[in-house]
Image 1 (cartoon, rainbow, N blue to C red):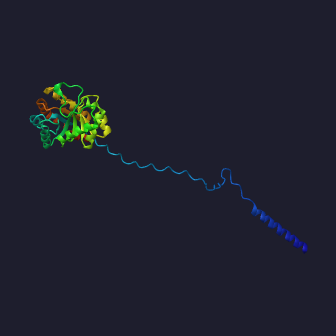
Image 2 (cartoon, rainbow, N blue to C red):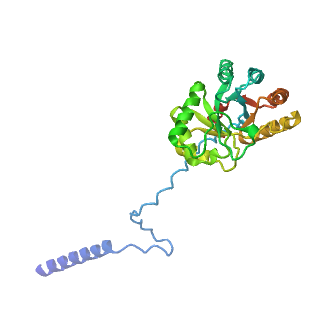
Length: 294
């Protein structure tokens, strides 16, 4: 019996071993090309950032408005008033904004200045200055400023002449081809004018004038004439010079035309002024030219 029991136990253990081997046998290999894909672990790399969106452009600006040219302006200055009432009345018959330049110490100096002022016109002191050479019949007149004078003497003379015409807005040069080349003399004059709030117009009787340079140093308002209109006393010549002033005004924006109280000058002006106005010229008093640099 013991032997039989051992045999039974042997077969039981053998059967159990066979069963274990059967269930632990690996499964069949998948066919070639049909292997099961093993999923890759998730990538730790980050994708590059996308470029920012293009900025939205503003709508185009409208084109700038067309620039309109400022009108060409001309200041007419009539020098040498003071000799007579007739010449003053003749000049003041011009129906445009006007500037008159009055010589001191003559019989109608004060009256001419007063009439012009009361008519709404601008008045300058036409200050006599030493020329280089002049014939006896063309002397600069009373109160002339002499080259080489001391600043005190120049200051005294200019102060006295301004007292004769207390409501002038500026000063212009009468003759002066020598005095306007004298730096110290012009400095003394300009210091007086600057203190009184006046300006200066150089009639440019010499190309060696130092007035512009000295005016800049002193800080004085300064202008210079563009043309003399009546060096030749004929109507045709005067109108030709006025047309030259018109061309300068159109090119530079403004011009100063200087004349004298001759009947021929006034007649030519009266003939030319309506045509100039019709062509777009604006007439102004000389101080208005400081609103735009000449």
